[in-house]
Length: 114
Image (cartoon, rainbow, N blue to C red; front, side, top):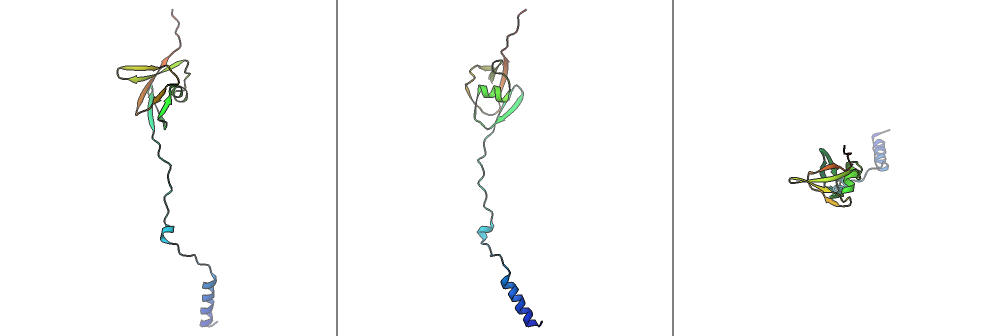
């Protein structure tokens, strides 16, 4: 094979082999994916245990059952306030959560008198 035949063979190889088309610059850049909105976290305490939720409000029942995991007929949730506690007897009362709220559990079971 002489030099001219080699050149023709190389040219045919170049023509027949697929070459990727150049990409425009804007297509090469990765577009940022729209991220899910960041949900605010609400921290609160029952006794000394810390809990976290992304819900801005919870009912008294939700706090007792879902978080404290106690029987709402045996315990009363009490919200710590300046100088004391406020008992939350209405299980359907909605509590608006704010940073580091503190709650206590009061025992509703009767104690025998001797």
